[in-house]
Image 1 (cartoon, one colour):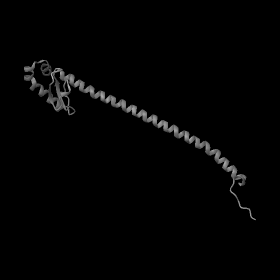
Image 2 (image 1 turned 90 degrees about the vertical axis):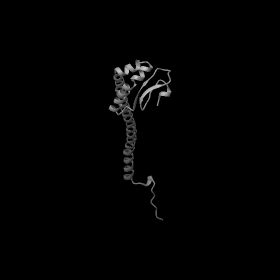
Image 3 (image 1 turned 45 degrees about the horizontal axis):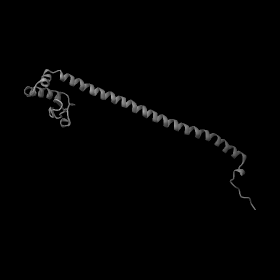
Image 4 (image 1 turned 90 degrees about the horizontal axis):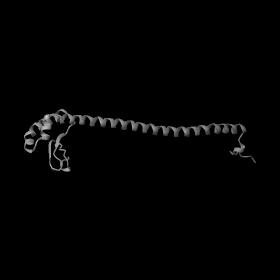
Length: 146
């Protein structure tokens, strides 16, 4: 009877066994290094993404602060107008007489700054009404808010 060749490791020639051993001994460290490299790269990508988000958040915070600074300066400048001070210090009848002057100043500000949607002067707290000009009226209570 003829002997059938088998593919068991025991029957392999020594040369093939040495080649397989050399390939396995070389491939295992390479595979381990690849796994470690992928993990490190993944962690680095996460850290870089977090750093980018932090930097963007700081940039946006600066832009928002600058935005507020511009409008605080604008309000401070507006408060220095004699017409505005006179209106705020006036009594009810005097206030009505000064309303047209104040309306004209507010309209000029609205036309020159496209970011302003409207301007208003809040009345005394608790009075329940607002003296507002423009499309937004801001006051001391919720009835005066947009």
